[in-house]
Amino acid sequence: MDKLVVDNLFLSYGSNPILNGVSFELNAGEVVCLLGASGSGKTTLLRAVAGLEQPSSGRIQLDDQLFFDDRAAVDLPVEQRSLGLVFQSYALWPHRTVADNVGYGLKLRRVDAAAQKRRVQEALDQLGLGHLAARYPYQLSGGQQQRVAIARALVYNPPVILLDEPLSNLDAKLREEARAWLRELIVSLGLSALCVTHDQTEAMAMSDRILLLRNGCIEQSGTPADLYGAPRSLYAAEFMGSNNRFRARVAAVDGARVTLAGEGWQLQAHAREPLQAGQPAQAVIRAERLRVADGPGSNRIAADLVASLYLGDRWEYLFHCGELRLRAFGQTPRPAGRHWLEFPSHDCWVFAHAN
Image 1: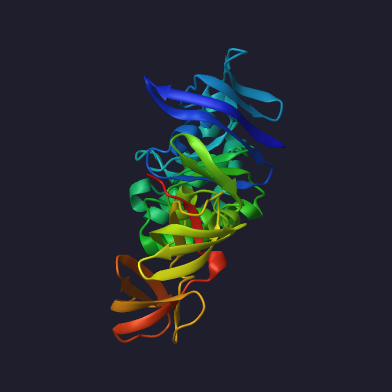
Image 2: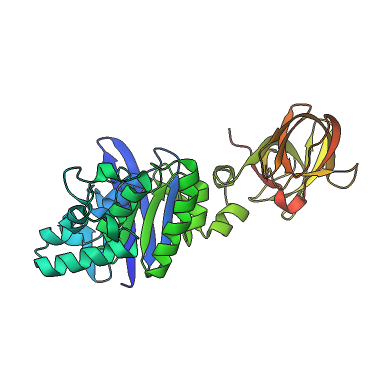
């Protein structure tokens, strides 16, 4: 498999547009996560690739095989696309054993019984489920059911595996372990995967590349480091990470370096889009980038610590500075009262004010 190509895809439910000209490529051996808020179009996009939704226009192609093209009047059904599907609900048949669930796709493809048995056992063994072949879904834990669903998707060696919120049914602790295991499995088997998630940590941990969707369009695409460390829009900056956002006025502009002014304070910051002196702006700084300093200094403002929250691996501090409400992280408890907060200029991003 060389690549999956999605080109200028449009899809609507009645008069409600869901996908608005989405284009991207999935390369061989690559894991791409579709990330976005509810209603952004990510699940609809995945289902369109799978053949479960019919776009109104555009093209979906895997190597030389055309899946969908409105101009050529091509729309292959799901079973002819031979893509591995892992649903959010797992969709296991409760009356079938683990082995029967995993082998059902092979049975539909009329693979002979001996080959079915061998391939099912190989898929189960790969996922550590070989000893559970005779059990039923109700006899399995949530994590085991998830692995059965993945085994069913892998058993016929699909060129691409599609995963729709594959970890959402697991509790928080198991989800952390599962995302590491799933990433390791995808890489070790050399799979190409397209995964839907609304969890930014999950997307960053699992993917080589993230497509951040907003209102049926790709807001930004890039590596996890790109989206987290170099957002190209206010929406992308706010969606990723744990953030402080505040309004300010642009007092001066020197290339990408700007001076922000607020009630009794000024800060140097980094413009992420063209700005002009005098215009209102929005600033974003990640909570972990905001530093609690020992005293006054360059690019620091005084603020009152009003609450500290112990999170186990760190403390979270809540500060007030006039109308500003700011959050920072640290490793030690701090007393309430006046402190100084340092804003590293390159990590304080400025965007035009969004009305």
